[in-house]
Amino acid sequence: RELEKEIRAAKRRVQELETKFASISEANARFKLREQDRLAQEGDVRQELLGLTGEMGNAVFLMDRSQTMGESGRWAEAVSTLKTWLQHLPVQNAAVIAFGGGQLEAFPSRDYARRSAGEFTSVLAELDGLETGGATNTYEAIEQAFRYDNLDAIILFTDGRPDGKYGSKDVLELVENLRSLRPNVKLHVIGVGDYFDGPMKRFLLGLREAGGGKFIGQ
Image 1 (cartoon, helix red, strand yellow):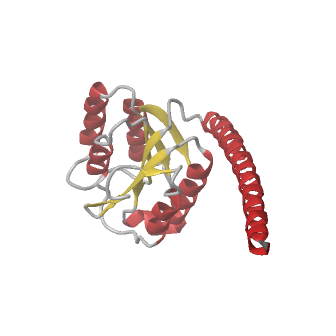
Image 2: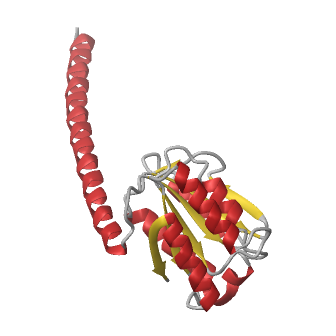
């Protein structure tokens, strides 16, 4: 009988704890929703201040890691900016493509990383281990970015004109052609380093115009 009493008492304590846990879980869920709304609102404000127009839910970031990006801390600056933007902009799904030396490296390797699953951190960690070098193969990077499904925006970080197999004219024509097929996708250009150089400036501004996005100088 004493054992039965103890069992009944233990069951009551378990029920009380389950009730408290359910209440805490519900409060935690409400807090997460409020926090997500707050971050989304802050992201909208920051996007507006940066002048990045259009939807940003699904975004592909193109990171130029050619040889010249290794000069004067340009690569580190670009990666640092990307980390800040991914933290505060209203991007829910993101992919990063690093290009240079004729190679493309996508993080994650397929599809998007999801903010809701906490996958941005692992993607950004991959960038810290990359080195700069080689030519600027912008054409191939943009071409791959447009292959992502439900794409809203492409953000290109670069310090120069393409000097690989395809030149500036080829890149501009590519963007015009691809946006004729997917006009809702905007390509924003982030100039890193000495982007006021005449030919480079004309290329970057032309790319921004063809992409329907904005140009920002770092």
